[in-house]
Length: 251
Image (tube, rainbow, N blue to C red; front, side):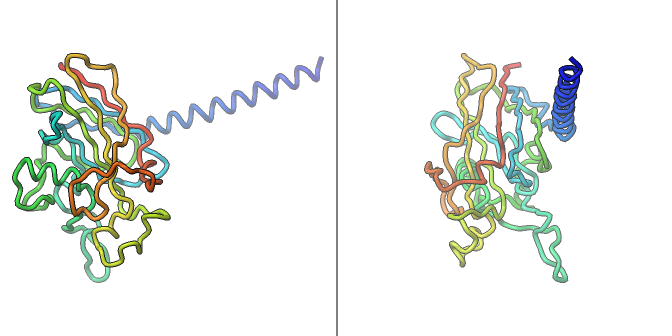
């Protein structure tokens, strides 16, 4: 009988320890999560995003925007500020050290850049200090999982798509290795090309939640705005975010 009691106590202690560890991990995740609010004064759809960081998350650049069902760019929702202003923490060199400065990263988010530039008739599609993305749609790059509460500018579109393009600098793998295009500076700053995610929203039949899935990648050097649907060469880029969802409301 004593042996049985001892075994039960050991088992309960193990379960308690495992539960405590799980609770600690959960609490840590919640503590790390940040909340961002964008374009709060707009009168359009409320868009509540949840981004769960993946194992390979390391300060990625990304843009979120809306298109109509014909693929025409409509508006920005959120763009990481460094990319939106062309000013990066390690953008220039001074006395042999990297310092904040302006840089052009055409290969970072080419799918977004080409579509936005075409719609807005921009002479230079890459945002810069002289021609940034409007501040209302920008924010600091989150360093962990985060929630984003945003609004569209209006509700004129009844059926539309929300797209997200994500890229992480110097994200190499066996196929997209750093020396693959040795003379291409744009490629070497990216390596694995950007990933594009999308969901379709029908305002007459709004679902409780939408899960973003990758639909393709951008050009490795940013030379065009095409969607490349073969993802077989992508590895760690698919682990930047573990899960991205959005809830949509007309209120």
